[in-house]
Amino acid sequence: MIKILQEILIFLIPIAKFKIEGKSMEPKFKEGDVILINKLSYLFSKPQVKDIVAIKVGKIKSIIKKIKEIKGDKFFVIGENLKESKDSRHFGWVLKKDILGKVCFKI
Amino acid sequence: MIKQRLFLFLAKILPAQKIYAHCDVPCGIYDLKPAQIAAATILKMTQLIDDLPFPENQDKNKMITYHNSLVRYILTKEEHARKCKEEILIIWTDYFKEEHLIKFPQLHETFWKAAKLCSKVKQEVNLQLAEELVKTVDQIVDIFQKTKTAQKK
Image (tube, rainbow over all chains, first blue to last red; front, side):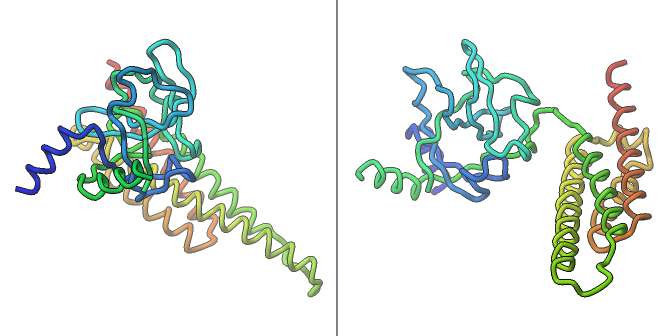
């Protein structure tokens, strides 16, 4: 029952809660940090350089990265901790449709 | 203030999903170069520790310099052993599949040996073990490249 309610909340509220796993965004975001993502951030505006965004990878996984460069509708994203990060330097530019939203709050 | 309270409230009621800040995502990008560099660094650090001359007299400054160098070499060795293990474990668990195991029956044993060596080179200052780790990682690279070549055909 609680799970169903949570699923409804995820669907209705444009904010998603994530727990970070990994070190590629250190020191800004550490492993275990809880963040909120605003899924409507880019509904009427374009992602900007330095925005920290959640990116959809495959059907169920998401990654967190920082936008470094923008070319039209493509975004070059990197980790804060370049030594530990696999990012656009490895998997190329990311499309806007794959950006889930912007990090709006860190707990 | 209201915004912050609202976010805190939402954080309480919403379930947390996982978001990855590392490379362990199904992006299909696998590279053993970091593991090779880490293994080579471990070997270099082991050589440096081995070659580090112990100060002949108890001169304070020389002792401090000696200990400083020794600690730096050990720290670097530790860090790269951790990194090497992490990199090969990702390739082992995420990249290789059953079909590879049929073609390369030594696959599991080679990875297991490399992972064990990553721990051993931390526990000991042993040139032979460090060299063995470099060789074992090279063997993994060899298998990896063969599977990549087979994919292209």
